[in-house]
Length: 340
Image (cartoon, rainbow, N blue to C red; front, side, top):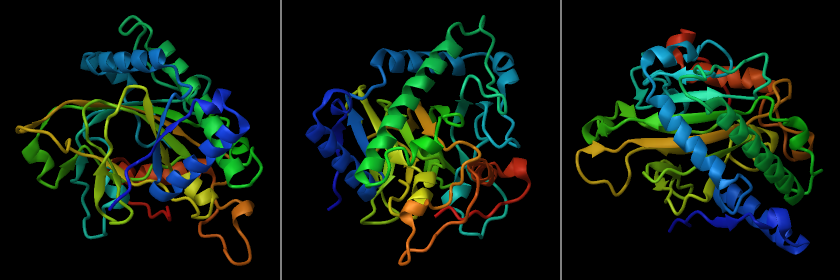
């Protein structure tokens, strides 16, 4: 029988004893290594900020097309910025393509909005006019910094637990390349999702170091059951104060496969009734390595018995290649990338 995802109390990260912090670190690493994911409560991202961010993103997707149009994401860029209209992203290509399909007909039933560091000059953010959505940029910026601080603390905890220098991961991540992703899943017929041609989000790993996923009361997020590969377990909603932490591909590559990325997907709620899958939202923070940093295996995780499993690439090179895979209409060709 599969072990359910643990819920860990993160309050000790700020005010716990040394023993409490050590016990938290052990549970954090063991659960992430076993499942690729874990839940936290009493984390450091303020709940009023989370609630305000959810409120603002719902307002964004309700804006008229002509207001959102100037923010449309250019999928040819190495980083997503702004609004991706419904169906543009095709996550099916990341893990589900076995090589026997040539045309990108499998789509995602969602639209999304991405933004990054407010001071990013290489990939500047795209915002709707302040008059159209007052306070949107300010709210997103605050949420960005609060999530970044939590990720830095989690990475230091993981480094200590893995018995390497506490700055092993954080020295390679100043959050300059980290991003917020907000997803809107419009209502869709059960028949459409069960056709096998459309999914809310197909099974995939995230590309960065770790991801924070803030819950939506409408179910659908599922993680792979590693005891039964290819099958997925619903991630239960248990309260607004929780956050799901996912290991992503860069952490897997840095640790030379010691801690694997958490495969996950979004589909219809397991307990839904009726013929219409309800509207859903998700709020995600992707903690990413700085763009110039090597995302090949770190020397701390390579030895005579365990050679490097992954090639050396900069974080920007890796992100760009992975992005090209799930925007096939933009790239014009499929790019093979050794993700894991």
